[in-house]
Image 1 (cartoon, rainbow over the protein chains, first blue to last red):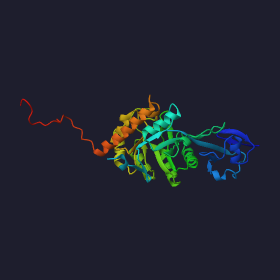
Image 2 (cartoon, rainbow over the protein chains, first blue to last red):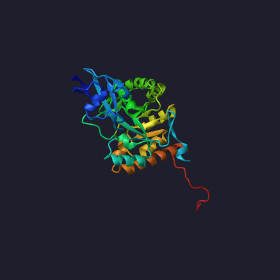
Image 3 (cartoon, rainbow over the protein chains, first blue to last red):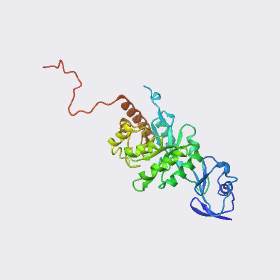
Image 4 (spheres, rainbow over the protein chains, first blue to last red):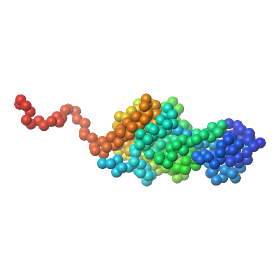
Amino acid sequence: MTQLRVNGEAAEIAATTIAELLSERGIDPGARFLAVAVNGAVIRRAEWTASPLTAGDDVEIVRPLQGG
Amino acid sequence: MSKHNDPLMIAGTALHSRLILGTAQYPNQQVMLDSLEASGSELVTMSIRRISLEGYSQSLVDLLGDRVRLLPNTSGCVTAKDAILTAELAREALDTNWVKLELIGDRETLYPDVEQLVPAADELVRKGFVVLPYCNDDPVTCQKLADVGCAAVMPLGSLIGSGRGLGNPAAIELICSRSPVPVVLDAGIGTASDAALAMELGCDAVMINTAIAKSHDPIRMAAAMKSAVEGGRLARLAGRIPKRTFAEPSSPQLGLVGT
């Protein structure tokens, strides 16, 4: 298990990649309009299956919502 | 004159509506979509937020479809770092390099933090973004934002969500007269006359959310704002008469009965 932060909250995950993390959280990695950053840098969708997650990473998973 | 002969050009893109619409605060999603239809807007703003970790539901983007261009914002950001990351996430999520840059300096007034705004805009322009910054109604700030390459400037009429209209119309008119890039009046619109006034003063467009979404009848207000923006734009192009101190009779003065 890896300890890191997901959307500002401490999390312990089995996933080792972003794609696995999304699946573990019940989010379809193929869903449109998602974006992910790790440690303040955007990780392109094409890299979600390869880009490794390591202990202490700070992960942001976002999507567009209504806004003004 | 058809409005289609008078498009708003932002970064080489022609927009045939001069009304930019926010998508928040509507009673429900269907009213928002119907209001969007009634407004005629072709450019709508969205926010970027952390996804609920409980799962993923249908995105608003799916419903907006291909009929409008999306303008993600960095609303709520108080640091340049967070605003820039939000813009980069928006570009990845929505496949657009357009961003409405908001950098808030004070949570009570939601006033822009100009000191951070100009360098953040500069950095985003350098990263290839089309930057539309929410900013003060200050000609110097607007000029600096244009100088770093912003595609438009979005000075506030009054505080976000306040509905107080244009607090300083003279400043807005001054900004419009000098700006090398389109001026979009953002924030503070309360009703249709505010939108018309902004256009009459020379604004190239207005951005409205709360005044439509929180009105008693959003769909009707959206139609009112559409008319107001078009009317204000036509009046601006037609050229208003100068203001006078005393009356100037409109009827002929010769041939008055009884003289």
